[in-house]
Length: 187
Image (cartoon, rainbow, N blue to C red):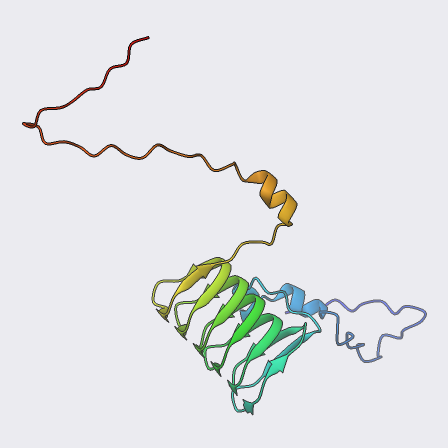
């Protein structure tokens, strides 16, 4: 209702318009009012490197890079990036490889990643190779799942493995009514 007038500072008069925040810094009002994006936690931290293919765009060809990509449109070709989010309106027809992959839309092709998450709205038709896989209830998945492991150097892997143990051949079980021959040796 009532606003208290702020006193004028020597470098800024009271009737001067407010100074807008820099584009890469959050505005002071944004910190007070929660935004819809802030209420839905996302494991991918928005950064300057996030590129977005919007829902009204169609791309034909391969996409590769080390940055982050969000696909809300459609891609016909292979996608190989650092982190990938396929939005609910996004569709990829081709092989996908990313360190972190979150699928909310449609992927038809092989999927490879360290962390792969299929959200409840996901549709994936293809094999998934991942170290960690999460599939929410309601997600559609058709294909095989292969668990990949972190690469270990050959000497460490060989030292960690126990030597193979040779087991004696199993003795066939005899019928209960059949006579059994026991061989005894004298010492």
